[in-house]
Length: 130
Image (cartoon, rainbow, N blue to C red; front, top):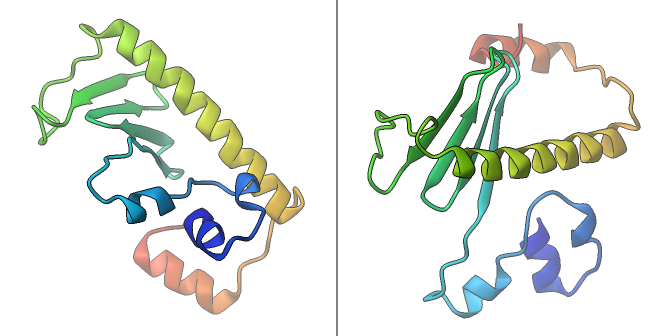
């Protein structure tokens, strides 16, 4: 959405989650490092990918770190060997989660939203909710 707002010349992208990639459309040869936050609320897992690094934070306190350009199968956990990288990515992950929760609170007004019964059934069938 920030890219679309930027393209249309509209304000408000700074209040949204995400970043505009309009400059990449103008110059596709440029690579823009991007942060990707993934959350699995049912399992309590969170992951952050930044460039070739991927950090996985588990609710039991285990942390995994992978170098995706050298280990795309995520077989070699580097967390114990790359402590400074883990710390850097953990700080970024915490910031992104806080931003995400802040946006969620603004969108919902801090209230729990009721889900339409038919939509709930579909989400349950897909395993998104219990």
